[in-house]
Image (cartoon, rainbow, N blue to C red; front, side, top):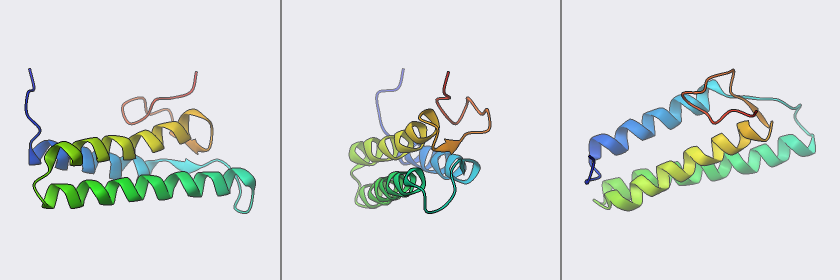
Length: 97
């Protein structure tokens, strides 16, 4: 049972989110409403990823863990609603039905 948040754990999830962001691809052409919405979601992902790194560097591992999971949730949401293609990877994403 995990009862502690560690630097290794944060680094693992930072890497996982980076991998997921690299793998996912936009499903709509630039300039469309969907592409603009996706860009906003990706900014949120990037902001929370940055926050996770900042919190980790300052020793606030609980907030770092929360932030990186929130960042990944933005990717999951974008895949789930059809703004990003997760390429069938159910290990990195919560895929649409």
